[in-house]
Length: 178
Image (cartoon, rainbow, N blue to C red; front, top):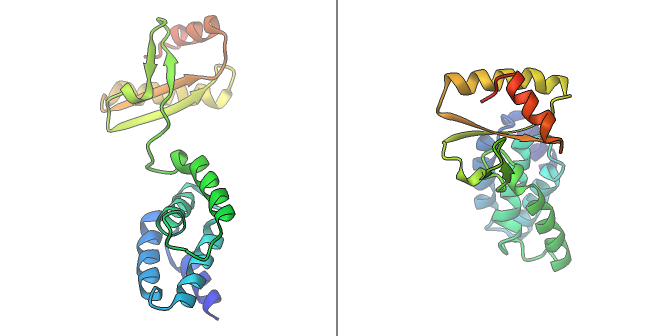
């Protein structure tokens, strides 16, 4: 019965956004912590429920659950092998969740200078991987260039995904990309 109620609450009743889910997890775990068996059951449910994240929001919830309860020692019943596997999985997705700081990238500008993602000073940075032979990229390049030109508060860190520098430079020049 409890499992069904938890599933209904977390999967159907709550808005599937991390800022809605995480506070409810905090409230529930605080209430169940007084009883070891209930606490263990709830944490096991939450980890199982969010382990196969459906989107970036629920991935963020999974990282929160792992960091807040499992990887910091608040789930003493879990063995070291499981924790090691969980930590490996969480570390592989940690920098890709919504709102997380991206891993630093060092790329070359068309002029041959090196530039790192961490050197881009902006509150809003779009990291964009593209290719000149991708039809969707052609549409997105124009939209991003227009957005960047109109709003100097937004920076775009565009990463060309092929190795042919001549094609890259030619595409930038033909399409007047900044």
